[in-house]
Image (spheres, rainbow, N blue to C red):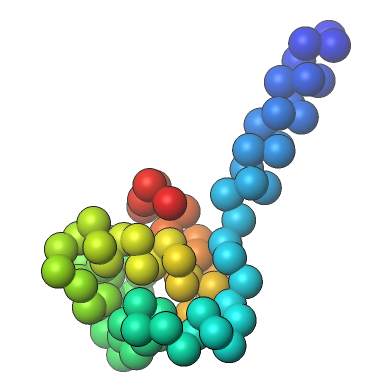
Amino acid sequence: MKLSILLATALVAVAYGQSATECTRELAATDDCADVINANACYNQFRFQSNQTLSCIGGADNNERAKKACKCCSCVGQVMCNWVKNMRFNC
């Protein structure tokens, strides 16, 4: 019983440890976040339903785009952060 409580506590701690970074003015003003924030019309087209949403973000390749999405998702909103989590990017 104690082991299951300890395991459950550890899983909750890991889940909360993967929360998005707060979107500060400084973060939002970076070029990386501009690439993520400025793609709102494109996000509306794909509705955060597939990996195609990643193509909305400016970047050299999908790895670079994924890093930007991880770093700046909170500047777009919770739906973006949920999508990043569901896509299981290596944030």
